Structures are given as C-alpha cells and as structure tokens.
Image (cartoon, rainbow, N blue to C red; front, side, top):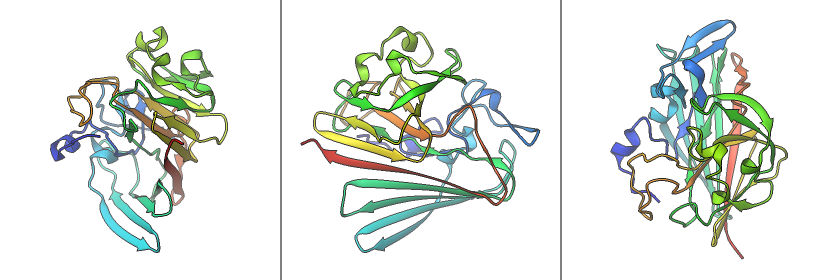
Length: 279
C-alpha cells in the first residue's frame, strides 16, 4: 500500500515490514542486565531504546538465499552481528526465512538466532495491514486475550501485567476504531493503540475488512498492536490520511520478562499470515 523509496527504508525510525530486534519494543533508559552486568544501548526514543536502537536489525543489510522446491518458494535472510559499542554481548547468527506456497495464500516467517555468549534476543516483524482499505474505519479485529501489559502513559515503557479492560478487549470481533478514542488511550502518549496483549489461547488473531480476512498464527506469547498513531511523513499510495492508515500486529513474547538466550541455545519462533476473501 506504500510507494516507499529506498531513502524511506534507510530511515532508522521507519519500520514498515522490517525484522525487528535484537530486542523488539521499548527498553527503559536503554539498559539491559545480563548475568549481573548492565549494558547500555543507544537511546533512540528519548531516554528509551526502541526496537534495538540505531544498530537494530531493522537497519542492517542481510544476506539472501533463495530456494524453490515443488510448489513452495523460500527466501532466507541471514546476518552475523558481532558485539560492539552499544550492543548486547555475543556474536549472533540470525536467520529469517520467508516461505510462500502455491497451494494457499499464506506467508510463513521463521526466526532463528544463536549466540556464542549469554544474551537477550526478542524478535518480531513490523508489517502493517489495511486489507484493501485506506484507513482503519472498516477494519475488525479479534484477539483472544484476558491480560495486557500496561505502559507508562508518558514514556510507553511496559510497567505491569493487568486484566484486560474494555477498550482493549477484542475477545469478540469488533471494529478497531470503536474504542480508539477512549480516554485511557488518547490521554497517554499512545494516542491510540500501542499495547501488548497476552494470548489466552492458541486461537489465531483475525483481522477483517469488508472484502478480506487475515489470520495470524504464531508461537509467541502475545502481540503488540499499533494503529499508526503518528504522522511519519510517509505518503501511502491508497490514502490521503496522515495517520491510522493501517495496523501493525507484532507477535512478541512478554516485554516484562525477557528471557536470557544461553550460549549455544537456538532461539526459534514463527509467524504465519493466512489471507482469504470473505465468502
């Protein structure tokens, strides 16, 4: 939906469709503690580190390998990243595989990482969706979640896990814009949805427009939903709007309890996006 130029994609603050890491989401003061040692990351959102900072995976060039087998096509992106100033410990090998099949309208993403030192890895993809629409007005969303991670209203740093509240309740399919201007949302820096919902079951996330349906299946424990709340200066091909032109659905593990990836262990996650027409 976007006539993005190479210059746009080189912008370190633009995340459209990019692989996000080494740690997705926000880190307070850019400080990560591993085995009692504190590491200072570059702060690219005020005092926060967002999506790995300037050295994040979204700003790196990956190597590419292409594979065709029977009716499927796979592209594997790979990157080896060494520890340097402003980075977490470890020489880390990353692999992100995109697979398409002729048999269905699905895109499968597989993430893998392995480090030669204890470190923290928390990846996702930052795709936006509008399903043929020019904004959020007619999009419906369903996410089975009884809990969410409450962000600080001024910094958006994750604070605590809480029971779901009405404006964040998508257990039954509802219009995204139904509660998007509710006081809890617009009185904070989010100006809409920028929240982590914790999955209560393995039911797919469902996003639906009048014409199309998207199901998202993953082995992450939750997902960050973000409704394009700020004018980033990028023009969209099918929209004259400046914001709320689509929704980013970013499957992630808990932002409150990021696990240490032990030396030699393999980090593995997957996301499947399945597209269909409404009957």
